[in-house]
Amino acid sequence: MEKIVVKGGQRLTGRVKVEGAKNAVLPIQAAAILASSGNIKLSNVPILSDVTTMNQLLRFLNIKVDFDENKHVLTINAADPVSSEAPLEYVSRMRASMVVLGPLLARTGHAQIALPGGCAIGSRPIDLHLKGLRQLGAVIEQHDGYVEARAEHLIGDHIYLDFPSVGATQNLMMAATFAQGITTIENAASEPEIVDLANMLNKMGARVHGAGTDVIRIQGVNFLHGCEHTVMADRIEAGTFMIAAAITNGDVVVEGAVAKHNTSLIAKLEEMGVTVINQEDGIRVLGTSVLIPTNIKTLPYPGFPTDLQPQMSVLQLLANGTSTLDETIFENRFMHLEELRRMNADFQINGPVAVLNGPTRFSGAEVAASDLRAGAALVLAGLAADGITQVRNLKYIDRGYYHLHQKLQQLGAKIDRIDVEDKFKLAVKPSKNKTNQD
Ligand SMILES: CC(=O)N[C@H]1[C@@H](OP(=O)(O)OP(=O)(O)OC[C@H]2O[C@@H](n3ccc(=O)[nH]c3=O)[C@H](O)[C@@H]2O)O[C@H](CO)[C@@H](O)[C@@H]1O
Ligand SMILES: C=C(OP(=O)(O)O)C(=O)O
Image 1 (cartoon, rainbow, N blue to C red):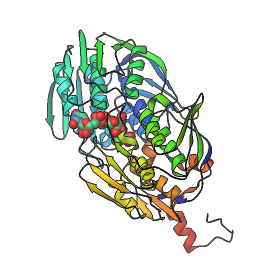
Image 2: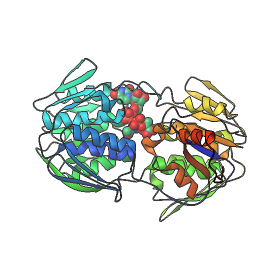
Image 3: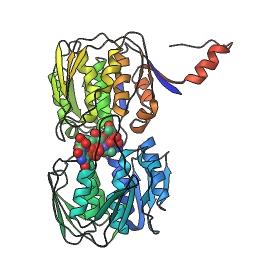
């Protein structure tokens, strides 16, 4: 078992580079299923366990996948006949496996996917995905823990989403590329990752219009082919480093970060007294010694992203007074706060609202990540804490952050990733060499 160990108190300075976006590349990998000829060549692909899981799932579906990790280039070829079943083994490891439903159904007329169930942050139903696919003419049944969809032909329709679900919008957009006629998705999600997927689909020969707004129109085509595409920068990873800079009163340039993708975060950082400068090569964040409290509500894009809420709660807890956090997207996304209590945080949770009483003097403790962003939040709290913080359950952090500890190290953090077994072995058999325990 590995842990991230942080000795707090260092001001972060310097430059850090953002990877390609996890939440953009996963649906884009799934979209490759639709290409019955040619290679899909993806650049700027992040090296993350979720990307590996999606690659394994594609291979299981009889699709050729080659990931050149040195170059961050992923080549996918789905020219051979594709099988249509995604078993629980993959779906349970990564909920985003669900986005193969739309493309599999469109390509093969059949898709059988293990039901994902909930996860640590909430229940995460897929009713909107299924409702939309039914409107396109799919017959859908649930049995033995699977959802099974069939459709000889999908036919375009007007779909209204009760909530602008990111995954449902992606699944429906991909299914509709092969539907006869025109599909309109109203109250569609407008996240930048939706735009990235639409751009990629259009390079494959699809006709998707309006992505990035709340009405997306897709004119069906008969055939999609290979293309080349560069995955957008990860706005959540970028935001995590921007918050880390603010947490340590640092001065950090987040290279490759796109300001227009993080306007809500920038507005909230500025409200708290942090200086944010939009530069040609990224975003520079300069901290402040006195953070002003602020109230935050998570919302669909362009509202404040739920995926930055746990990290931002750490900054709010450092502010000079009481802040609130209203989590409207996932009903159970405060798990990190209970761990932060072990680091001296003072807060009350009233349903979807957390009242965070700052200023907090975090003290180091042993804590465990319950999900990806909770893990990032605990590492960030460790950067500001007195003493040593040890964060367990790194498998969650590895889903969405590439070399988080090394990147923070480059910025001056005293942070390491250690194998607990090795440490134990070291403790029982001390080496003659002197080791630096910092
Ligand atoms: C891989 C990926 O891109 N994951 C992101 C995606 O997840 P994901 O696509 O799962 O998120 P959704 O936008 O679908 O979910 C948002 C809300 O809608 C609800 N809902 C969703 C679908 C449905 O059929 N019925 C339903 O009720 C969910 O329970 C949740 O409360 O968007 C979330 C919201 O920005 C982010 O936190 C995730 O990081
Ligand atoms: C919730 C997240 O991802 P997923 O939807 O893959 O669980 C996330 O990226 O924070």
